[in-house]
Length: 503
Image (cartoon, rainbow, N blue to C red; front, top):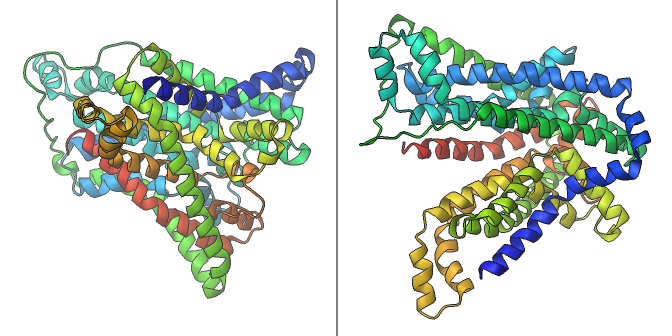
């Protein structure tokens, strides 16, 4: 049983590494001289400067904002803490390109690096808030008490005791934000801010899979790997687990006193920019468009195709992640960790690189698969495998292996024993992984545009087409539907983050 499972996991890992292999192949096929000439252009230098500046400015702001909000909602007596915590996560229900659409609806001249940073912060800070808030809930306050007993001020305790314990959460969340910034297309294309992703898509659309697009993809992948390596260095190898007798108690609540109500200004201001502006803009365009923008035949078709592709992509991704999730728990070892690392490596690549790789492979090697459901589903599997893997691994770990052994002792084959026990009991985790994967698919734009079969028109594609035609009123219903269907999945994220700490 384990040999078959490992074989399936290896096949999935090899498929997931197709984009990485494509980048290497494209570099070799281009030749060193041509590759150098294409990469050393001033245009590439400008794109690199824009991308580096965007990451270096946006990520620290997101980190500061996330720490401040997490502290207020988890460790103080600020009124309405649970409501504010939910509102800090809700911006994830609004796709990044819808945030951009909402902002330029109010300020049409908005563009450039400043606009990119401002919109990116409100769109992506929840990716940092979630792990930091979870870390605050899990911190042992005994260390803070000991530091205070040594005469350290509250500010010094926070700086020297609390912040170092948040390093893992800050590094992981910052990496996630940075990778999203490198991969994002719609947000920056709408405000006319050039990044590697926007340039690759434009190059693909103008020359259809040209060599220049391949070389831009190479630089983008190098940026991704550099970001991953930098995060690993910052994370370090320090120990963060508590060691000692007894159990960690819950942290006490800091009394804000006269600042108790004033503290609400920060989350309120964030909610205005992250939720109020999209809500206002969408409402304004819905009212301006009236009933005529609700073309139910077109909207119904886009909604049905979106839900279908989300279900197919989510289900296949969960099934693809199941073998390695089982191996990582039941047969943990060097081989299973290697296969698992391939999954994470592949998912770190931007959607535009994944799409470009699959376009090249299908056109050159398997033309009948070009722009088919199978190809776009494979793209979703490559991009969103970790979302399903994390949920599945957690659920499988909670199922005693003795149940599988008992089922096998009653005469069932290893496969049937696995299905009757572990797979059945891990179903809630599989459902959560499918929901999180579907959230990514629902809001995915670049790969869907490049790989979707002819005639496909998802909510994101329809929104992008209409907003590109400056028909902002006509695009509003599609944006509203994306937000409405994303809200339950963001609630699931919030619920899981609190469940980690048993709350």
